[in-house]
Image (tube, rainbow, N blue to C red; front, top):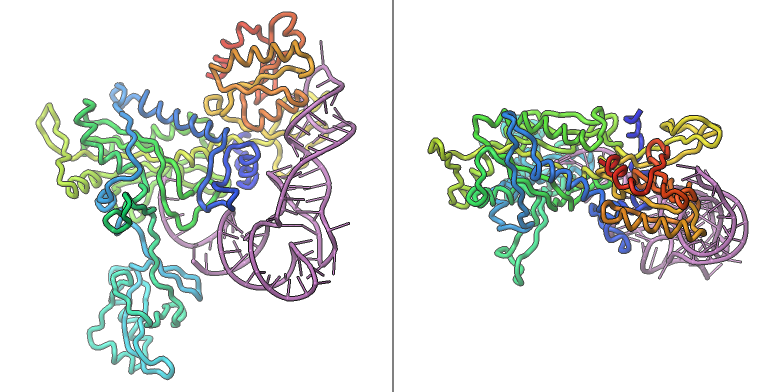
Amino acid sequence: MNSTNNTVSLETLTSLCKRRGFVFQSSEIYGGINGFWDYGPLGIQLKNNIRDEWWKAMVECPPLGPDGDPLQIVGLDSSIIQNPQTWVASGHVGGFSDPMVDCKATKNRYRADQCWVVAFESSEAGEEGHHLRLEVAVEADAKEVAIETAREKLSKKEKKSLGDNPAAVAYTQMDLPDGWPRLSPATQENTLTEPREFNLMFETYVGAIKNDESKAYLRPETAQGIFLNYKNVVDTSRVKVPFGIAQIGKAFRNEVTPRNFIFRSREFEQMEMEWFCHPDESQKWFNFWKEERMKWWESLGIEPENLRFRDHDADELAHYSNACVDVEYRYPFTAPDFGELEGIAHRGCFDLTQHQEASRQKLEYLEAETGNRYLPNVIEPASGLTRAVLVILCEAYREEWVPKDGVEGGPIAAEPGQPTPEGYESRVVMKFLPKLAPVKVAVFPLLKNRPELVVKAREIYYMLRPKWTTFYDQAGAIGRRYRRQDEVGTPYCVTVDFDSLQDDTVTIRDRDTMEQVRVPINELETVLAERLG
RNA sequence: GCGAGCGUAGCUCAGUGGUAGAGCUCCACCUUGCCAAGGUGGCUGUCGUGAGUUCGAAUCUCAUCGCUCGCUCCA
């Protein structure tokens, strides 16, 4: 059963990726750098193939809408560094990042804006002076609760210093005096850290002068570049609501903890489409894109049972979002649970409203037929291209048992943890769909020490090369060459043998079944075209 | 950032104070009439990095960097 493949460990996968040139750790010769990855010769090929599939499905040949007409989606490539006001308007500067407070003793972590601080004076022996007591509460009346708790825990003298109307201030909003002990709610001791900003955005400076005026950010998402160009696109490309703008590009987040190979990295690539529609139709389009996106993932050959939707609860919605559903995949490191792959968000008119206000530019859409003006609502399917690469790698990886001479049948899925049975040997095969495979065809002479075979094989290689990514190999035994191609997921191998010299035929060997068919060389391109889709 | 574990060849790993190893991979030649691991030969390591202890450190100590897992966050 295909779906059992998710038992592949990330360790195994990482090692294969390095060995065969899919993914390397960035700056490896200098000891690496956490959260950054390089895509090797095969990795970039795979990534480009996924990228091209998305672009085709979104921009070049978008799906048919509910009325049967093709949707209107145009492409964009906006800059990575934008006017920094962009990120103030979008909410990324300011409220977006949550400062956190750690208790060094208990390892508890609190959101600083949920910590309420009560100041008091202490005159206990050995701890003369001012103290800050922190209470953690999330309810609406947290302030009052914090004050009450402080009253209960303090000594008489300390209570007195609180006064009749003590103030409780959120940890983030307070100008914290130096040297005042911060009492942890858990330990009653000075074990809390300062609130620490987990700023998601990378900062840089534009121009020669490095100061606050010149500070800019590497974009944490590609979406804002689309909103900034919304008016340009409407004015120049004759699109009418509903329509979409799609973009693929790098984004940067200074993640607290990059994890799980390329799953969460600090530099990654996004594929985002902003769908602009009338507010009254937004829910319909939200549902439409939800279904469409799932279909697209399945079209990449991902097992449906490894995919699922997960609706966001109201309390986990981002500040800009009215509704959000994730497409989730059963990653090896989450299995049997699932992890995020794509988010489809109903952003309402939040972004256009924000940018309209901040830029004082009119961003309303004028409906030609009715004369109505309105800010469109936005449905945003946003997925990670580099995360898609990981999913495709996980999904493609298989270990199989292959019958040796004299044993009937084809390859079968290996039982995890079991030794290879008598009469079989094991192989690793990457079962990419042909359209995603980094190399489509490999060409071999059966033997390399027969010049006639080599010459003919080279001819075939030259013939196929302009059409598909083709790999020529003559090193070692033929079986070894097949296995090498299995491990990088090449769907077909073409071999020139002694019959080829007589009748101008070659064999095509299928990666998945390992079966061979013999075809005339002059039909080779046609047959491969059929099989490669 | 905090806590725990780990870092030896391209990969997987052995080596607990005394001259750095194995298997696989890779390269060359031979062999090979279709599914890796037949023959011969060969390359690869400042044992993550730096400092310390020691006559002597892959091994002990400290620091640092990186990786993995948990807290946290997200495409």
